[in-house]
Length: 140
Image (tube, rainbow, N blue to C red; front, side, top):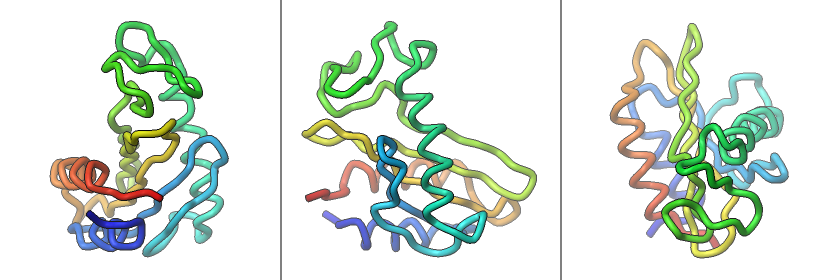
């Protein structure tokens, strides 16, 4: 089971990976980073992507069955620490941003962010691998 650094290095091994980070969407802080940042600063990218993740995780429109994930709320799956959204994909002219929420045994508020080059990245493969990494990630 990989820790944060190993997880990010595995994410960077994906075709077209430009940058990766583990972000706390409550605080907007990067817990770990690898590669480049789209704006040249990982902390700025973490804060900006955290806003997007927070909106998706907390708004009723995205919650299955209308249950939100606020603090210690229980998701529709019934597990504490599991947001109702699995991942988000933002497509830009030059790349893809994939945000994968990490379910934990505690009140989770972290996600993996992978920035992929649009020409060389494989979005389907990235989603599959990020899901696997999120399931195996050891936080502690």
